[in-house]
Length: 130
Image 1 (cartoon, rainbow, N blue to C red):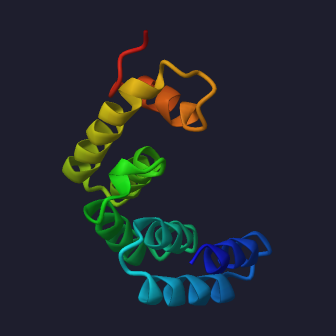
Image 2 (spheres, rainbow, N blue to C red; image 1 turned 60 degrees about the horizontal axis):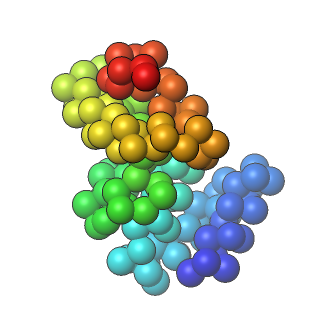
């Protein structure tokens, strides 16, 4: 699945979106228990303005264990942002709060890849600045 995922990401970077999404859908069907694969597809779908599909796939990937990977924080934040853009404030708030719970522990490592999300959560008031 990692080879398919890498190829799909390459297609995405080259703006070959249909090929990237097709490759990701194949990977999801072959490896449905890998939440990272579904999360990648969801991010591509949201980037392509397929928000409903992307939201559904992030929710499934979170349910399937994504929170326990390095993608947990960005997944919650991405979902919160998508809900906020859709005007679904209660759902957005719930995912901002979940992202803040995860971000709380990451602040101790200022070089962590998710620090930009941590800083944005602080600016939005979901996480107090230290």
